[in-house]
Length: 63
Image (tube, rainbow, N blue to C red; front, side, top):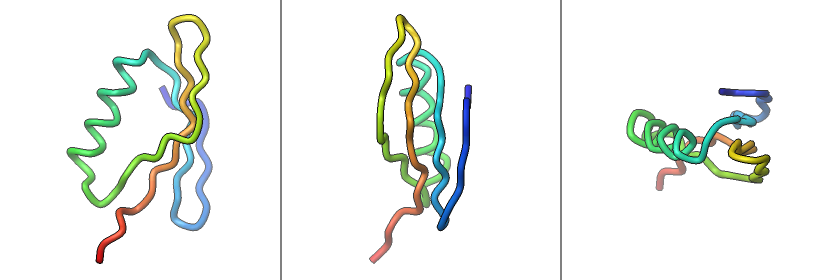
């Protein structure tokens, strides 16, 4: 579940809430379906079996 979003200069910042397994599945899905984007994890906060991940979705740099 997406808890919060913010966008600036073409970068989408998200805070995602869920289990570790669901987070990994989400990252793999984005990587597979959106090769023009990459996810950078900026911070992880764990509370019990719930994980809050602060991440940024950025365009993939092409050379």
